Image (cartoon, rainbow, N blue to C red):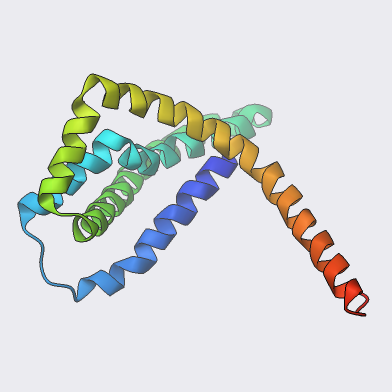
Length: 165
């Protein structure tokens, strides 16, 4: 869960950091941004932004299992944070929509939206979420293994060249 949050946060941060670069670009037609927003929603990208609140709530509730005296106050604080988090998720969804609108034509975005609305597109969206969960679970050990492999290979090649690491 935390890994998925980190992946989503990194994606969101990358989009947020890219936002200033788009600030000086020409204005997009509202229909173009709306088409991009529809693709973001249909493809599940915006769901990732709003899921951060649910994961946070689950993590806090898990932490409170050993501190039941804090539950009432914690529940109130969590509920009070929701509008702030929803606003942040909406801001990120808007930024992501603008990024996609700048990358694709409005006509292309409408075709992508039509795909996601089709039966095969809906199946793809459902299976993509499951597949991404599986990929995230595989990614951490793969990253460690691949990094170790690259370092080992680097050490071997440097050794061949007379260097000891």
